Image (cartoon, rainbow over all chains, first blue to last red; front, side, top):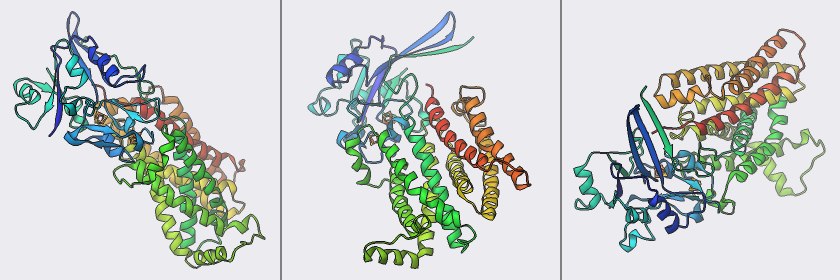
Length: 178
Length: 313
Ligand code: SF4
Ligand code: SF4
């Protein structure tokens, strides 16, 4: 099993519903976020192009944050999701420094926190992650890459996609449809 | 003009607008670790070579600083941790992939060794020192008998410690400024040079001071070579590393780096030492103090600038 997410940059309108849904679902401390919207404007005026995307931890297959963690608090969970065990985390910040996407933050309680794909609280119960289920344009797909019939596998077969900074060698599991 | 504008809705504390998670604790920890590594390296080296009498300060006196330096360094590391109650988790596993892990273990080896070495030389400070219990005397006798073995272990671990202070940074490919293998040897050299400077500062022996000053001159030469090499590597690399180098070549860190680290920390003390070796009278403390200052600044500037360098996407 390999969990993955595909996010359609053509459908995203940047409404931030996914951000708020995540904050509510996961009790994210005020002033922090586990997912966020990025707007990239490209081109020469007046021919401008905008790309909107909802970003989060990429649950990398070759995750530098897992490699750099001295205690094993950052680890791969079943299905390849990258999680942090708060009781093992010493808050050294090595993982925060090692993430090319700056997807992690230091929780006010001291340990390091980030997107979990809602693994324990939703996915294991058969639900989609909070961000996926709340998106009003239905621009996100979540599922198992090893299951060729899953939504994610299907949409990645049909559409063109990219990952963020592939040259960093992290092998992200969050894909952006372009 | 073709433009690209990136706006992010993320504003996490210590992460945005640029990473700022490591503060003074980490560079101080690395400086003290490097300094201790440098001093212990020379102590072990001269013991192995049988030159303890020629270099009394390097072998017997300067190492007395190292337990303090290492314990202070460990305290600084501890202060940096944000989940402090779980500190012990660091010593439940050894993960060779993680420099933070094997570095913490290296310190756990070097710190006790520095205490042993200092205990063996405590009579340099307190000539009438006597251990109260006979078992301590037995331990002392054991180490004295095996001093060469102890020195070899110390030599190897001090080198590992010295390189580690640089590898801790260079293992992060997410920060282009740090992601160069030059940082390991550069920080090792900086630690050795700080160690030599500390010996020059303390020593009252004319021969020893002269020899250590010469060694420092050579190490400064190596450091300058490595720094030039590092920038050449950056400028010949990808855009992210060119951007990283430009922090020091016109960017916000240009003055602090070239003034404090290179000029005041390397070039000026090198010139002072050359003049002194040629018989000019100089304030004796000036060159070594400048070298120690430069070594500290190197860690601070690399630590802070590295966190500002990043991939853009
Ligand atoms: S995006 Fe960052 S935090 Fe997430 S798995 Fe990759 S390196 Fe780790
Ligand atoms: S902050 Fe926690 S999760 Fe991150 S590297 Fe350190 S111990 Fe591991």
